[in-house]
Image 1 (tube, rainbow, N blue to C red):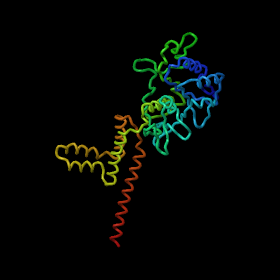
Image 2: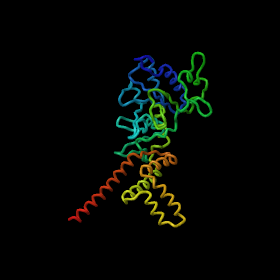
Image 3: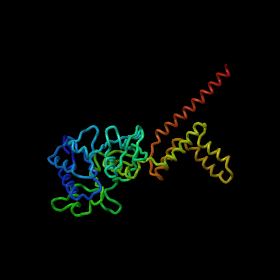
Image 4: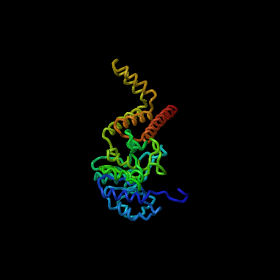
Length: 330
Protein backbone atom coordinates (compact mmCIF):
# COMPACT_ATOMS: atom_id res chain seq x y z
CA UNK A 1 0.00 0.00 0.00
CA UNK A 2 1.22 3.57 -0.68
CA UNK A 3 2.58 5.49 2.31
CA UNK A 4 -0.21 7.19 4.24
CA UNK A 5 -2.92 4.80 3.02
CA UNK A 6 -4.63 2.52 5.57
CA UNK A 7 -5.10 -1.10 4.51
CA UNK A 8 -8.63 -2.28 5.34
CA UNK A 9 -10.92 -5.16 4.37
CA UNK A 10 -12.91 -4.62 1.18
CA UNK A 11 -16.19 -3.43 2.72
CA UNK A 12 -18.18 -3.96 -0.49
CA UNK A 13 -17.23 -7.64 -0.70
CA UNK A 14 -17.73 -8.09 3.04
CA UNK A 15 -21.21 -6.58 2.81
CA UNK A 16 -22.13 -8.89 -0.06
CA UNK A 17 -20.94 -11.91 1.89
CA UNK A 18 -22.80 -10.98 5.09
CA UNK A 19 -26.03 -10.24 3.20
CA UNK A 20 -25.90 -13.71 1.62
CA UNK A 21 -25.10 -15.36 4.95
CA UNK A 22 -27.99 -13.52 6.56
CA UNK A 23 -30.33 -14.70 3.80
CA UNK A 24 -29.26 -18.35 4.26
CA UNK A 25 -29.11 -18.24 8.08
CA UNK A 26 -27.74 -21.82 8.15
CA UNK A 27 -24.36 -21.21 9.82
CA UNK A 28 -23.45 -22.05 13.43
CA UNK A 29 -21.60 -18.87 14.24
CA UNK A 30 -19.62 -16.08 12.58
CA UNK A 31 -16.40 -14.73 14.02
CA UNK A 32 -15.96 -11.48 12.09
CA UNK A 33 -12.46 -10.54 13.23
CA UNK A 34 -12.43 -7.18 11.47
CA UNK A 35 -12.08 -4.11 13.67
CA UNK A 36 -14.40 -1.29 12.62
CA UNK A 37 -12.60 1.73 14.03
CA UNK A 38 -13.01 5.39 13.25
CA UNK A 39 -10.28 5.32 10.61
CA UNK A 40 -10.84 4.25 7.02
CA UNK A 41 -14.49 5.14 6.39
CA UNK A 42 -16.18 3.88 3.19
CA UNK A 43 -19.52 4.44 1.47
CA UNK A 44 -20.68 0.91 2.41
CA UNK A 45 -20.19 1.36 6.16
CA UNK A 46 -23.77 2.32 7.07
CA UNK A 47 -25.27 -0.66 5.23
CA UNK A 48 -22.54 -2.94 6.59
CA UNK A 49 -23.10 -1.93 10.23
CA UNK A 50 -26.87 -2.26 9.85
CA UNK A 51 -26.46 -5.76 8.38
CA UNK A 52 -24.18 -6.87 11.22
CA UNK A 53 -26.59 -5.57 13.85
CA UNK A 54 -29.52 -7.38 12.21
CA UNK A 55 -27.74 -10.78 12.12
CA UNK A 56 -27.86 -13.52 14.74
CA UNK A 57 -24.85 -15.52 15.97
CA UNK A 58 -22.15 -13.03 14.96
CA UNK A 59 -19.47 -11.20 16.93
CA UNK A 60 -16.96 -8.45 16.09
CA UNK A 61 -13.87 -7.31 18.02
CA UNK A 62 -13.39 -4.13 20.00
CA UNK A 63 -10.45 -2.75 21.96
CA UNK A 64 -10.19 -1.02 25.31
CA UNK A 65 -8.01 1.78 23.91
CA UNK A 66 -9.96 2.62 20.73
CA UNK A 67 -13.66 3.29 20.12
CA UNK A 68 -15.84 1.56 17.52
CA UNK A 69 -16.93 3.57 14.50
CA UNK A 70 -20.62 3.05 15.29
CA UNK A 71 -22.08 2.59 18.78
CA UNK A 72 -24.70 0.20 17.40
CA UNK A 73 -21.95 -2.45 17.09
CA UNK A 74 -21.33 -2.55 20.85
CA UNK A 75 -24.05 -5.18 21.35
CA UNK A 76 -22.21 -7.49 18.93
CA UNK A 77 -18.68 -6.76 20.19
CA UNK A 78 -16.22 -8.45 22.52
CA UNK A 79 -12.76 -7.39 23.69
CA UNK A 80 -9.85 -8.72 21.64
CA UNK A 81 -6.99 -7.69 23.92
CA UNK A 82 -4.21 -10.14 24.75
CA UNK A 83 -1.63 -10.64 27.51
CA UNK A 84 1.64 -12.48 28.09
CA UNK A 85 3.11 -14.62 30.85
CA UNK A 86 6.00 -13.48 33.04
CA UNK A 87 8.63 -15.42 31.08
CA UNK A 88 7.30 -15.11 27.52
CA UNK A 89 7.63 -12.07 25.26
CA UNK A 90 4.95 -13.22 22.82
CA UNK A 91 1.33 -14.19 23.26
CA UNK A 92 0.71 -17.10 25.62
CA UNK A 93 -2.27 -16.56 27.93
CA UNK A 94 -5.78 -15.46 26.97
CA UNK A 95 -7.81 -13.43 29.53
CA UNK A 96 -11.53 -14.14 29.23
CA UNK A 97 -12.46 -11.34 31.64
CA UNK A 98 -10.94 -8.00 32.54
CA UNK A 99 -11.91 -4.71 34.15
CA UNK A 100 -12.63 -3.34 30.65
CA UNK A 101 -15.30 -5.91 29.79
CA UNK A 102 -16.01 -9.35 28.33
CA UNK A 103 -13.66 -10.86 25.75
CA UNK A 104 -14.67 -11.74 22.20
CA UNK A 105 -14.41 -15.55 22.76
CA UNK A 106 -16.43 -15.32 25.97
CA UNK A 107 -19.11 -13.33 24.11
CA UNK A 108 -19.32 -16.17 21.56
CA UNK A 109 -19.46 -18.73 24.37
CA UNK A 110 -22.32 -16.86 26.06
CA UNK A 111 -24.34 -16.74 22.84
CA UNK A 112 -23.78 -20.42 21.99
CA UNK A 113 -24.26 -21.99 25.42
CA UNK A 114 -26.26 -19.52 27.49
CA UNK A 115 -23.55 -19.75 30.20
CA UNK A 116 -20.95 -17.24 31.31
CA UNK A 117 -18.05 -16.73 33.70
CA UNK A 118 -18.87 -14.80 36.87
CA UNK A 119 -16.51 -13.23 39.39
CA UNK A 120 -16.98 -13.71 43.14
CA UNK A 121 -14.23 -11.59 44.72
CA UNK A 122 -11.11 -13.52 43.57
CA UNK A 123 -12.99 -16.71 42.59
CA UNK A 124 -14.47 -17.32 39.12
CA UNK A 125 -17.29 -19.73 38.32
CA UNK A 126 -19.18 -21.02 35.29
CA UNK A 127 -22.47 -22.09 36.83
CA UNK A 128 -21.50 -24.45 39.68
CA UNK A 129 -18.05 -25.14 38.24
CA UNK A 130 -14.83 -23.50 39.42
CA UNK A 131 -13.00 -21.93 36.45
CA UNK A 132 -10.01 -19.78 35.53
CA UNK A 133 -10.41 -16.22 34.28
CA UNK A 134 -7.60 -16.81 31.77
CA UNK A 135 -5.88 -19.89 30.35
CA UNK A 136 -2.83 -20.90 28.36
CA UNK A 137 -4.17 -21.91 24.93
CA UNK A 138 -3.33 -25.33 23.48
CA UNK A 139 -3.88 -24.13 19.87
CA UNK A 140 -5.92 -27.10 18.64
CA UNK A 141 -6.60 -25.15 15.42
CA UNK A 142 -3.75 -23.66 13.45
CA UNK A 143 -3.04 -22.48 9.92
CA UNK A 144 0.25 -24.12 9.08
CA UNK A 145 -1.13 -24.73 5.60
CA UNK A 146 -4.06 -23.50 3.54
CA UNK A 147 -4.73 -27.15 2.56
CA UNK A 148 -5.73 -30.17 4.64
CA UNK A 149 -4.34 -33.73 4.39
CA UNK A 150 -6.70 -34.53 1.51
CA UNK A 151 -5.44 -31.59 -0.52
CA UNK A 152 -8.65 -29.60 -0.03
CA UNK A 153 -8.33 -25.87 0.48
CA UNK A 154 -9.26 -24.83 4.01
CA UNK A 155 -8.66 -21.08 4.02
CA UNK A 156 -10.30 -19.12 1.17
CA UNK A 157 -9.87 -15.60 -0.16
CA UNK A 158 -12.97 -13.50 0.34
CA UNK A 159 -13.15 -12.30 -3.25
CA UNK A 160 -11.45 -14.76 -5.58
CA UNK A 161 -12.58 -17.95 -3.81
CA UNK A 162 -15.78 -17.18 -1.93
CA UNK A 163 -17.56 -14.53 -4.03
CA UNK A 164 -15.88 -15.14 -7.39
CA UNK A 165 -15.58 -12.52 -10.10
CA UNK A 166 -17.40 -11.24 -13.19
CA UNK A 167 -16.47 -14.34 -15.25
CA UNK A 168 -17.52 -17.04 -12.76
CA UNK A 169 -19.29 -17.51 -9.45
CA UNK A 170 -17.37 -18.30 -6.28
CA UNK A 171 -17.78 -21.19 -3.86
CA UNK A 172 -20.54 -19.39 -1.95
CA UNK A 173 -22.89 -19.71 -4.92
CA UNK A 174 -21.56 -22.94 -6.47
CA UNK A 175 -21.85 -25.03 -3.29
CA UNK A 176 -25.21 -24.49 -1.54
CA UNK A 177 -24.16 -26.41 1.59
CA UNK A 178 -20.84 -24.53 1.94
CA UNK A 179 -21.93 -22.64 5.07
CA UNK A 180 -24.44 -25.12 6.52
CA UNK A 181 -23.74 -25.83 10.23
CA UNK A 182 -20.27 -24.27 9.89
CA UNK A 183 -18.25 -21.92 12.05
CA UNK A 184 -17.37 -19.07 9.70
CA UNK A 185 -14.18 -17.16 10.49
CA UNK A 186 -13.46 -13.93 8.64
CA UNK A 187 -10.12 -12.27 9.26
CA UNK A 188 -6.48 -11.98 8.23
CA UNK A 189 -4.25 -15.03 8.62
CA UNK A 190 -1.12 -13.06 7.83
CA UNK A 191 0.02 -9.50 8.39
CA UNK A 192 0.42 -7.07 11.28
CA UNK A 193 -2.04 -8.95 13.52
CA UNK A 194 0.23 -11.99 13.89
CA UNK A 195 1.62 -12.83 17.32
CA UNK A 196 4.58 -14.89 18.46
CA UNK A 197 3.55 -18.05 20.37
CA UNK A 198 5.22 -21.27 21.50
CA UNK A 199 4.02 -22.97 18.27
CA UNK A 200 5.24 -20.15 16.03
CA UNK A 201 3.54 -17.10 14.57
CA UNK A 202 -0.26 -17.20 14.91
CA UNK A 203 -2.78 -14.63 13.66
CA UNK A 204 -5.07 -12.81 16.08
CA UNK A 205 -8.04 -14.37 14.27
CA UNK A 206 -6.88 -17.89 15.11
CA UNK A 207 -6.03 -16.88 18.67
CA UNK A 208 -9.61 -15.73 19.17
CA UNK A 209 -10.98 -18.87 17.53
CA UNK A 210 -8.83 -21.17 19.67
CA UNK A 211 -9.81 -19.25 22.80
CA UNK A 212 -13.49 -19.79 21.97
CA UNK A 213 -13.05 -23.52 21.35
CA UNK A 214 -11.10 -23.80 24.60
CA UNK A 215 -14.21 -22.50 26.36
CA UNK A 216 -16.51 -24.83 24.42
CA UNK A 217 -14.25 -27.78 25.33
CA UNK A 218 -14.27 -26.73 29.03
CA UNK A 219 -10.52 -26.10 29.16
CA UNK A 220 -11.23 -23.16 31.47
CA UNK A 221 -12.85 -25.46 34.04
CA UNK A 222 -10.59 -26.43 36.93
CA UNK A 223 -10.16 -30.21 36.67
CA UNK A 224 -10.72 -32.17 39.89
CA UNK A 225 -8.15 -34.73 38.70
CA UNK A 226 -5.59 -31.98 38.16
CA UNK A 227 -6.30 -30.50 41.59
CA UNK A 228 -5.67 -33.89 43.23
CA UNK A 229 -2.42 -34.37 41.26
CA UNK A 230 -1.24 -30.85 42.09
CA UNK A 231 -2.09 -31.33 45.78
CA UNK A 232 0.05 -34.46 46.12
CA UNK A 233 2.87 -33.01 43.99
CA UNK A 234 3.03 -29.76 45.98
CA UNK A 235 2.63 -31.65 49.27
CA UNK A 236 5.63 -33.79 48.31
CA UNK A 237 7.78 -30.76 47.45
CA UNK A 238 6.73 -28.92 50.61
CA UNK A 239 7.49 -31.99 52.74
CA UNK A 240 10.93 -32.42 51.19
CA UNK A 241 11.73 -28.73 51.68
CA UNK A 242 10.62 -28.61 55.33
CA UNK A 243 12.27 -31.97 56.08
CA UNK A 244 15.58 -30.70 54.64
CA UNK A 245 15.58 -33.53 52.13
CA UNK A 246 15.69 -33.90 48.36
CA UNK A 247 14.05 -36.30 45.92
CA UNK A 248 17.01 -38.68 45.93
CA UNK A 249 17.12 -38.79 49.71
CA UNK A 250 13.44 -39.73 49.81
CA UNK A 251 14.01 -42.46 47.21
CA UNK A 252 16.98 -43.81 49.23
CA UNK A 253 14.85 -43.99 52.37
CA UNK A 254 12.13 -45.86 50.50
CA UNK A 255 14.75 -48.27 49.09
CA UNK A 256 15.85 -49.27 52.60
CA UNK A 257 12.29 -49.83 53.78
CA UNK A 258 11.16 -52.05 50.88
CA UNK A 259 12.00 -55.69 50.31
CA UNK A 260 14.29 -57.05 47.62
CA UNK A 261 11.44 -57.23 45.09
CA UNK A 262 11.03 -53.45 45.10
CA UNK A 263 14.65 -52.53 45.79
CA UNK A 264 15.74 -52.50 42.14
CA UNK A 265 12.87 -50.21 41.17
CA UNK A 266 13.56 -47.84 44.04
CA UNK A 267 17.28 -47.73 43.19
CA UNK A 268 16.31 -46.76 39.64
CA UNK A 269 14.05 -44.04 41.05
CA UNK A 270 16.91 -42.86 43.27
CA UNK A 271 19.24 -42.58 40.28
CA UNK A 272 16.60 -40.65 38.36
CA UNK A 273 15.98 -38.26 41.25
CA UNK A 274 19.68 -37.52 41.59
CA UNK A 275 19.49 -35.12 38.63
CA UNK A 276 15.83 -34.07 38.87
CA UNK A 277 15.53 -30.79 40.73
CA UNK A 278 12.34 -29.03 41.77
CA UNK A 279 12.11 -26.94 38.59
CA UNK A 280 12.66 -29.94 36.35
CA UNK A 281 10.19 -31.95 38.42
CA UNK A 282 7.53 -29.28 37.88
CA UNK A 283 8.36 -29.08 34.17
CA UNK A 284 7.98 -32.84 33.73
CA UNK A 285 4.71 -32.73 35.67
CA UNK A 286 3.49 -29.89 33.42
CA UNK A 287 4.29 -31.91 30.29
CA UNK A 288 2.54 -35.04 31.62
CA UNK A 289 -0.62 -33.15 32.61
CA UNK A 290 -0.75 -31.59 29.14
CA UNK A 291 -0.26 -34.92 27.34
CA UNK A 292 -2.71 -36.96 29.41
CA UNK A 293 -5.22 -34.35 30.67
CA UNK A 294 -4.95 -31.58 28.09
CA UNK A 295 -4.33 -29.13 30.96
CA UNK A 296 -1.66 -26.43 30.94
CA UNK A 297 -0.46 -24.52 34.01
CA UNK A 298 2.36 -22.11 34.69
CA UNK A 299 5.31 -23.32 36.79
CA UNK A 300 7.01 -19.94 37.22
CA UNK A 301 4.99 -18.80 40.26
CA UNK A 302 5.05 -22.26 41.83
CA UNK A 303 8.81 -22.59 41.40
CA UNK A 304 9.30 -19.12 42.87
CA UNK A 305 7.17 -19.96 45.93
CA UNK A 306 9.15 -23.13 46.63
CA UNK A 307 12.38 -21.20 46.14
CA UNK A 308 11.38 -18.68 48.82
CA UNK A 309 10.23 -21.53 51.06
CA UNK A 310 13.63 -23.20 50.75
CA UNK A 311 15.33 -19.86 51.51
CA UNK A 312 13.17 -19.44 54.62
CA UNK A 313 14.14 -22.94 55.80
CA UNK A 314 17.83 -22.26 55.09
CA UNK A 315 17.89 -18.95 56.99
CA UNK A 316 15.92 -20.47 59.86
CA UNK A 317 18.53 -23.23 60.20
CA UNK A 318 21.36 -20.68 60.06
CA UNK A 319 19.65 -18.56 62.72
CA UNK A 320 19.29 -21.60 65.00
CA UNK A 321 22.97 -22.46 64.54
CA UNK A 322 24.00 -18.90 65.40
CA UNK A 323 21.74 -18.89 68.45
CA UNK A 324 23.30 -22.16 69.63
CA UNK A 325 26.81 -20.75 69.20
CA UNK A 326 25.94 -17.60 71.16
CA UNK A 327 24.44 -19.67 73.96
CA UNK A 328 27.59 -21.77 74.21
CA UNK A 329 29.73 -18.66 74.32
CA UNK A 330 27.50 -17.15 76.97
